[in-house]
Amino acid sequence: MKGRAAIDGLSGNANSRPGELGPTASTGGADFAFAPDSLRAQVGQRVTWENRDTGVTHTVSADGGAFNSGDLASGKRFSFVFGAAGSFAYHCAIHRDMRGTVSVGP
Image (cartoon, rainbow, N blue to C red; front, side):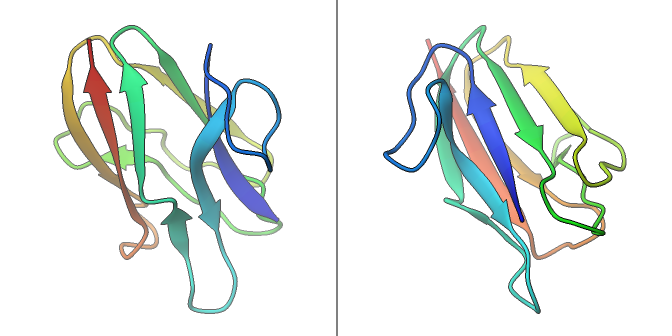
């Protein structure tokens, strides 16, 4: 199973549903990772992460504290609206090697 981030108003790659765009959190063995590890969004856009891993809890936690999902059990979602431009590095607080970045522009 996979986690996915969706961005309102943008279409994703050929493997995603309309309105979805990475990053995707893939878990399995020791390969816990957000992939792709970077994402572009616009100020005011909502990014939604969904944990699609069976039996695995993750978080989506901004390095600078701008957002924190808390524990996301399988099937749970977390959304955040980016209200300012900038680069927002984030990680899973449980699996510290899971890292990603959202670059927000005007």
